Length: 330
Ligand code: COA
View 1: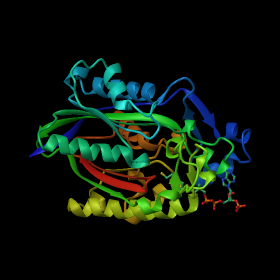
View 2 (view 1 turned 90 degrees about the vertical axis):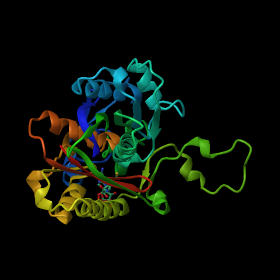
View 3 (view 1 turned 45 degrees about the vertical axis):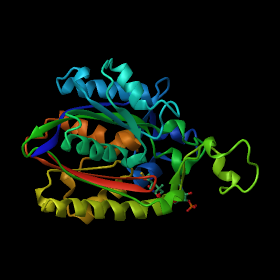
């Protein structure tokens, strides 16, 4: 059977660190509040760099670690909701900046924090039906550009970063075993960022949204998102295990979306996965949205802690609402 095996990983976060103590000087908050409620101690913020700049750095590392030349890639998928431009896609910029001269397909997908797992799922379908053999999947977000830095409810939670993998079509048992995608658009108001595209310059009446939605910043009902995230991540982990006839004890590492240590711990507990098997870096990066899982996967891959045959369970949750899980045999 043809599977999508991860043959390379890469990640990049911008160098500037914004600590909880830095945030104490910007909004009414404290290191103690942020650390105990979220597990976050610091996050990286892009100054000069854009989503494309960050994604390209992660992508180059992934291609290098796969020992490929960029021209061997035959599909690029970038998960992001903070692309440099409305169009072209970040994926097209990545193709150009990697110097790929073949006219391969390249496109972005929008599934917020679940975006990387959505990308993995799509890439796998291209590979399984023979349409692609080597696929670059990147997740990147620069939420620092869509955060209201005066809003302590949201500005302490997010950071910027990117991660990428190269998937290769291979026969055998290693690779992506399954992926499970979900969404519920009825809950969109719990987590969203408006844009001015919504407003027609010709239409002055009968607006569906009220004017308060027009500020171009991330809005979130944190408490409701928290509860739904715990429920959805737990359920999708469960379905991923059942689909593959795996028990929690079979999982080598749980790699959850890094939004909040309390969501991560509750997901692990619901799924029956012990604490030492849960990969955590939310303390260093905060929530990097689509970058979160591939950054964690890259760190784990380069830590020397993974061996062939290990079972990785990944789960994410984000705006949409969207949520997803995937199981990889390393
Ligand atoms: N510093 C200090 N106090 C803060 C604060 C901050 N940065 N942010 C909020 N507070 C205050 C609130 O104003 C509230 O005060 P009040 O009781 O006087 O009204 C109090 O802390 C408790 O707020 P609450 O929202 O109940 O806290 P919480 O325990 O639910 O934690 C979140 C808030 C945002 C950390 C939590 O709800 C969360 O993580 N939600 C999910 C967010 C997320 O991961 N989103 C992305 C999903 S991909």
